[in-house]
Length: 264
Image (cartoon, rainbow, N blue to C red; front, side, top):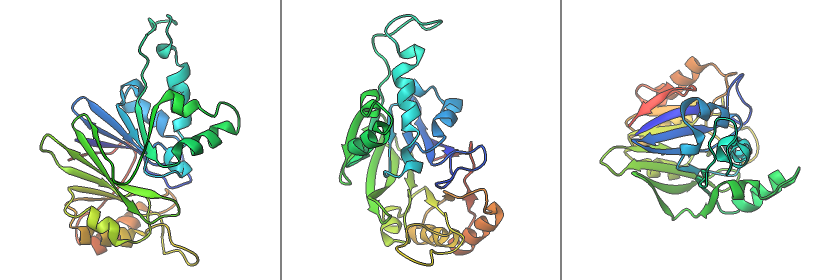
């Protein structure tokens, strides 16, 4: 199983960057975890978007799903997707329609977003949209997916992807405040990718994110074999964030960068 970082920015994109998006591949299977701002163009660098088997969305914040809009336009209007020949494309009776797994309420959310300017059913027509519950287990080719709810500002799910062919486990923490829920869900994982958005804890209100030091502590308590911190702005020094996480993790830590590839 191979994980490619397509985007790792928080809710404001890095310069020339993208928000959350991770391409998971195993042999001929391809799955996209989250599809935030800028991710669709990054995906096209590494994979033909019509060959994606499934897209899985962790939660309904814009920086984790907004590029479903250009992706949907591509699936709907791209020359290769049309039933008649266009330019070098021969036409097809079977245009690509990836499965889109998204949390409960996604259909209504997508309709509201796209309906603000036009075709509200764009996303649900372009994809095979299926709303999941936390108890659901998914099979995408050789990949096995399960969820665990973590505390954030909206219903949010950490996601585990396991290789049914005897490979390892990859755990994606999505967004959350400090929580034992993520620690237990990620127990013994081969690769934990966890957010480290904040330079310091939120000073007021309900917490919703982690610092780099807190991310490292979660990795240590989970017994993760490898830790990658993500969801970090380029306005924070990566070396500082790495050291903060390394100090609490007790081992080497990597900071996600676009194009990085991790094998599990």
